[in-house]
Length: 317
View 1 (cartoon, rainbow, N blue to C red):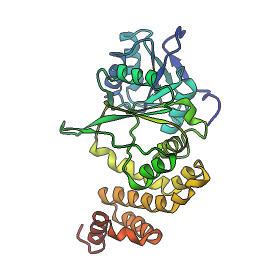
View 2 (view 1 turned 90 degrees about the vertical axis):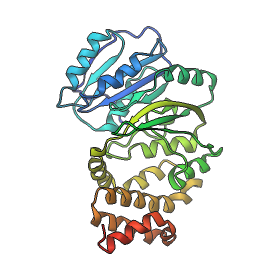
View 3 (view 1 turned 45 degrees about the vertical axis):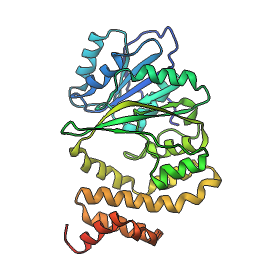
View 4 (view 1 turned 180 degrees about the vertical axis):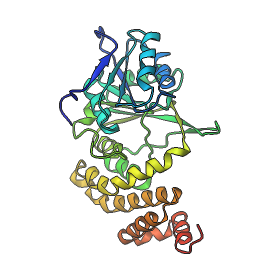
């Protein structure tokens, strides 16, 4: 994990923490002036002394600093904030881990919000499940049109191997930042890889599922807002990371899980294919689909992907 603090930090907020909280909620914010107040207020409206809120402004160039300052005026000494030179989401999360007072962390995106009343349920769950090191909660996705869909939790496999397989390969175990709480112990194998601007959570979630006890909270914790205009941005960073994330993930996993590597490589290529297809970057989509087939020809039987690939090669997109 990166050491030391960025020398160009500026911080505001609580001058002295009197009681060690149980959870620190970290909100990374880069140019989220339009939504960071909503995100922060979803925590401030239900927190008590067991919860610390930390907002990290990652060098925003919009009005995010002014919005955070206004929040300080409206909620004096109720949260801390840090402003720093832009370094990317992974480095912000690593800074949040170092700066957090609590042993449990929740990373809440600045355009999402916590469900009203969910914080108390999460605190109660943590206190009742002392063995757990990862709490997986439910979330509600909100479309641009305002439609809501609740995402429930299925059966969580008991062994680390099966959990990692379900997460990386089978895609039957989905994790969302903001709907998960992580004990700081899970970052011992490594923090968020700062060389990545996308998919930085994959290695951390994988190492956690592989090595640490997991519990589930069958309650919606997060309102996750979908944004159509973020797709091309996501695809650009995703292609920059490419398949490098495969090496990063498996460098953190035990020897007995290395047998999953080839399957994950193929799955990663399919994921990049799908993102490129949706963004209408058909040349990139061809490359990723071809790479996936080279690693596992059986992917031809995944008809939803094969149909899209055929449309590209026939020029019917």
